[in-house]
Amino acid sequence: MSKKGRVFIVSGPSGCGKSTVLKEVFKNYKNYHFSVSATTRAPRPGERDGVEYFFISEAKFDEMVEKGEFLEHARYAHCSYGTPRGPVEAKLLEGVDVFMDIEIQGARAVKAAMPEAVSIFIAPPSLQELEKRLRGRATDSEEMIRLRLETARVELDEATHYDYLVINDNYLRAAGEILEIIHSA
Ligand code: ADP
Ligand code: 5GP
Image (cartoon, rainbow, N blue to C red; front, side, top):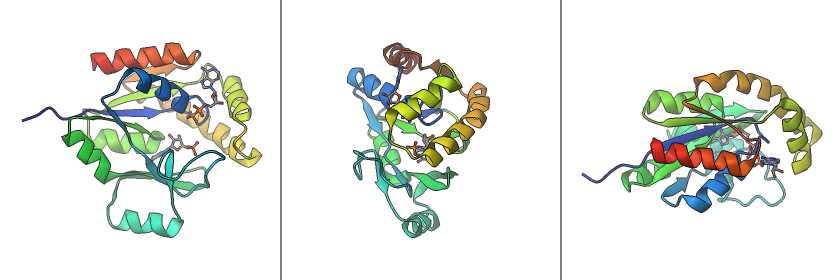
């Protein structure tokens, strides 16, 4: 039987730099599929449907939940987010590693269903720096930023439950650490 792909769960507070670090990782590691989630939140400027997320209505989201089309799903900052099951299963069978950028409830669900999944928590160097990055990104409303900072405190408490903790002080260094994890896992 050919080798199955591995699942890498990546979590961390919104704005800590997950997308930035993963983008760097994918420049140097090609056997990957990035799991594009569905969300009911509005697209940020520059976000494209089907690339960063599938942007869908609450009704469509509920329909997908009913049909069992999500591997996991969760509420976050008044919006719904879910990992479509089909592409994940297909890529794993092809022997491709699947990376999912999901929050802590989803990470727990995936780890329960797939204990062999490798979980990585990316943390900002401090909450002050997180706020600076969220504001510097300039993509979210004040309300969105406030909700993300409140949630960050709870998320950081969960970090010890992950297989690996990576501090994103410098994104190139953090990406290097994740590449080491990929090659050693
Ligand atoms: P996330 O995907 O976790 O929500 P992003 O990758 O969008 O976060 O990063 C949030 C902001 O922080 C972006 O403006 C990004 O350029 C910046 N950023 C990411 N990593 C670093 C870093 N190591 N040092 C300084 N700024 C960073
Ligand atoms: P953002 O709105 O900032 O893009 O993402 C908010 C949070 O939702 C982040 O912590 C991100 O990891 C998480 N997230 C994105 N997609 C999913 C998903 O499919 N499932 C879960 N559980 N969380 C997700």
